[in-house]
Image (tube, rainbow over all chains, first blue to last red; front, side, top):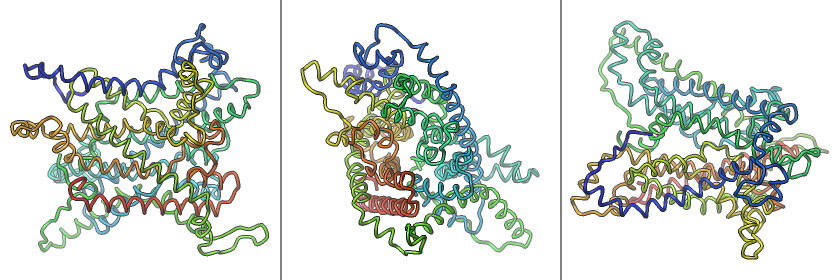
Length: 297
Length: 317
């Protein structure tokens, strides 16, 4: 957890704990609300199809716990295509996230620390592009890529994910604040070249913002649905979001080919959210600080 | 951290003094290096933002008929889009949806952030994580989960209403789908907005509150008169993001459509309509025009919003 607030036990604080019951109740109700879907998913990932449909109750375990059976089913169904989807999601998120972050760091530093003709104009253009609805770009990009025969390849998902104007904005704001000009000048006087100055002096100071932008852009790519849905038709290239969406529409149309897909969808959804939850929990000291960058300026 | 205007950061002006020729050469070299740092982003920006937009703009000016072939049609596609009942109904839906959703989301996330900022207990920290958690869950998965919970066969609603001998409402049919989707989106995003506001609240110097308390301000007054105005930049940022995101509403209706029993139509939102037009009917010229028309609607809404909030001096100034 963060160390932002150290609980100070003073007489006044103790007197106020009684009054804190109402806010705690408020939070308690919200915690229940926000956990309901997760609870449902955990409970129902242990049920087989019969338990899902008939079942004793939607919010509690059925008589037989079939968790491991469902897991095995998930990873073997259709030649283990689910694992492929997870791998694809990871590939797109890592390559797209790392690539777009690297580009954003360089550009943010360039905007913050160099004066040149056209800088303000290009930065204004960039800010304007934050407001371009990204999904409005999906169909145009699809048509463009189709002409270049790039659709239905991994690049169709990765290349557009490299565009992250908001990341550049965050990096510029942060670099402008956290990297003192005097330090850069000192490094230059000592004879370091511009790129060495950037890599060895500026980059370490920008680390919290780098982690935040990296995490945010990886999440955005991992969660993306519209772009891969439009770009890909070979289901071996699907990320897990599009794959589960496919199962969902097949199951609704009763098209699982005799195999009940519903229990696979439930456990597949549960498994797919585990990596991101782990990432968020383990990196929380970075992103909780980093998220304030954009809002405070 | 200071609270400068939301977008533009103050521009540092260096006093102009005559430079020697070596200084000027050094300055030119520095400028070139500045461009080098920006170049990779510039390339991506041109290839994946400017090029698709320009290409789509070009496409949207042509029509493709079976008999006539492809021909230049000026703004015929746009005239068609802005008189197409499907597109207009979709735009009407996302605008109404934004007007209902965003105040609910903002009230909830601001309320939670203020409560969390005032508490230091272990449970408060736990709730902060739990409420943020849906952000780490892809919108597709969130929609699938709520689809299950709404389902008359799997979900708890049927059983709940069964206890009192009632038929549960199906929250995705035509009558209830608005509320059903409001719930899904609020669940998905409120925690993210809450964290941003919370981070901004934590950045405020606490000595300001002490001063206010000494002057006799209550906790409510401190929250409404001091904290809210001080995080107004964060609120403005979130509002603009929420507006842009909601007008592009696609994932949830697309995922829930197969199980909605017709409550969600293929032209439910403009983006869904553009997707259907492109991929089910292969009308790429018209789909490009719809995408562009939606982009225009988003720009207009964002500018109306920014203009409206700038004029009211007291709130979000």
